[in-house]
Length: 261
Image 1 (cartoon, one colour):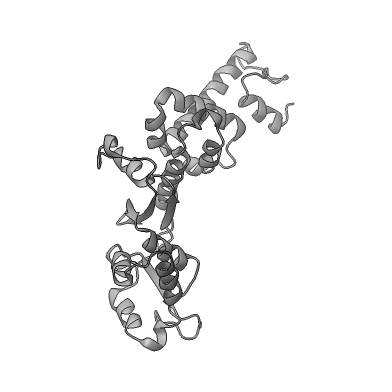
Image 2 (image 1 turned 90 degrees about the horizontal axis):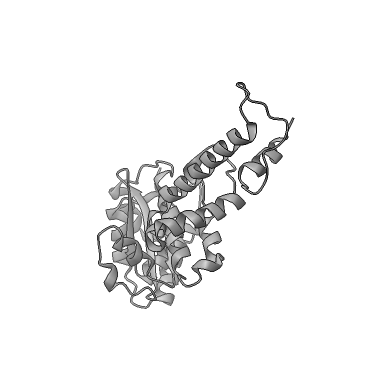
């Protein structure tokens, strides 16, 4: 009887022979049947990666992508029966994959695409009522210690490359010919009304959102944003969060003094 690790290893490595000890119900060649099964499994894993990373595939071409995905799949077998998150570490693999060294922005595009997958499957948390946010912002005593909790689908993807424009060009939003890949950009990914959205953020707003996610108070997050980008506008940043209903909870740091209760 073959152990599961031995079976799994052979299943994802076409250079290995069929594990010994197998029998077929109809007397056919076990090695031949195993080869068919192995091919089907590999194709399924490659297809799963293609579904999660359509822009990465478009940037390098389907044939190259599937060859790269095969290399990844051989070294990174699924760890869970839930295939929605398979390839969550694909960007790290791409980052160190020598054949794409001439496409340095590819890994960040992969990070953006996986953020969209995470966002789609994030928990569904209702947004805070606008009136509650406005009341907290209007109270100086609360404002100094106010913390904003953002929707769990929110992801900030910073890049030294034009990660948003590269993604948007493959959605028909911009012309790829006009994209300068070497232009730094930051993308905001979130889910709103059951739809995953992707927006470009200025450096200041990106710093502000990231600071809020790091549980900084509103004044601390605004200060960090202003230090990075003196042109940062707090009102515009808050308007963005309120427009897309991304604030789900407010607190002043004291569990007995919670403005949302």
